[in-house]
Image (cartoon, rainbow, N blue to C red):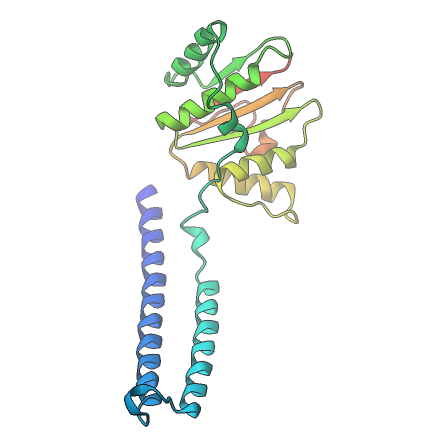
Length: 235
């Protein structure tokens, strides 16, 4: 199935790029020919024919509009996504020193992520001891070492806002969920996007209460074999 999807995607992209390439070649030749005609009646091209110049500028404007229409017609979202933007809060913890008291926990979490038998890793402790900073440092290390293809992270809080959690996941995946879509459509879209990745690390931070995973694209009581989850419980 993966080969079929990639093949279809490559074929579609190649067709679209060929269309754009042919369009650019045609426009370039046409404008170059008109440029030559515009200079035809002038001494060494220093006094261009005004009527020809006017026609040339109109043709260039039309070409620009046609190019925009061609790009709009090419729906590249089926084969690619925008690169996921960097999270500022993750960059902020990059230079934080890992205290000796946390180093052992940090190493245990990192080693656990490499164990395919462990699907969910829980981080527990009293509030204010640095659990959130720790999991952010883990996220940074995972991305630096490329242990997973994607890292998605969301803050749950005392009153979980499932749409906000979905939007945070979507941000990390470089996609945008439609606000007008139903809950089912958003959840299904997010799940399909997660399934496109080979290995995904899901980090749920600041959990205070039971979370219905199926509402954020993760089947209830299950974590896919390609996924790992870090739960940072606030209590």
